[in-house]
Structure formats: C-alpha cells, structure tokens
Image (cartoon, helix red, strand yellow):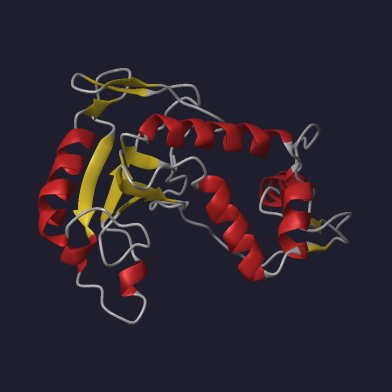
Length: 223
C-alpha cells in the first residue's frame, strides 16, 4: 500500500497496483535471484524508485513507507525530506487528520479495519537512526480477511484490494508460536535456494501429509 497521501494519492495507488501486478507475474525464485545479484545499495534504490514512482512530491503531504509489519506513514516534512512541503508546525494537526480519517475505514462486515494508530514520538524511540522512522504506525485489526476484500469509509468511500494477497501490510501475527522438540529428521539437499515457502512443505513432509502442488520444497526428511 505504498504511495502518496494527498492530491497524488490516485497516481501513487496506480503505480503501486502496477508494481503488484508485475510482482505477481515474476516467479519468486527469479525475483530472489535478481535481488541477490544486485549490490545492496542498488537493490534499495531500485525498490524505492519502483514503490514511489509517479508521486508528485509538490502535492504529497505524507507517504507510505514499504514494510512488512504494519502501516508506516511518514510526513513529507520541510527540512527533513528532500522535497518536503509540510511545515513542522503543522505536523501534529496533519497526523491527527490522517489518524481520524483512517479510523473511519471498516471491513465489509462493518468491523473497524484498524486496531490502533500510534505516533512514533509517543514510543520514546531515540538513536542515530530515529529520524528515519515513520511518524505514524497503523496496525490493522487481528481478524483474517479474504484476499479480495477491500475497506470502506462513510467519509472517503470504498478502497478495493489491489494487486496480490490482501493488499494489506501486517502479514505476521504477534500471537504465533513454534514448538521445537528433538526429532530424527535429517537435512535434505535442496534442489534450489531455500525460501520461506519451504517451511510449510517441510512440516507437511515430516508429518506425512501430502505436499503435492505445494510451492515449497522439503528441507528435512525422515530417516
């Protein structure tokens, strides 16, 4: 859900949708290979330009920072951002406007889509990289949603799910847990570079479940 918040929001969303479409077409293995082949600095620069392409910074008051945890909103502040347009004296009022507006969005069944919105300044985070943090952290509710479900607001209308997945950041659950016990499995030589999708295939293989049609590969095998 990267893009600009302001007059260029539609263009930012369109660019994000295009990027999501391209991402869904290119195989995970190929994307991973390209990312590893690029120097870290180049990979970050490329990802940044793709995520924020088409944003008119002269009219964008805030933008989404790409992430995989929660919604990160950063103001386009004068003196902090390269093309900042928001006067620091107006920051509090703008964050209140954004927070109030986001809080009006609901899931299709009427449940509030957002659990809480936190200002990073209220968390007491300090350090040499604190200036690179978002200004607002937006946490979705803990309910599972269907991939095609969008959100709607009585004030701002409906926003459909675009691209792949649910269209929402925050795919991790804070209540998740793992139980590790001694076993008799042994490492299995991977046929390709290991990936996070291999975890599910590995678990299924060890408990004797059918792995036919699964994307990942088992990384362990029973003797």
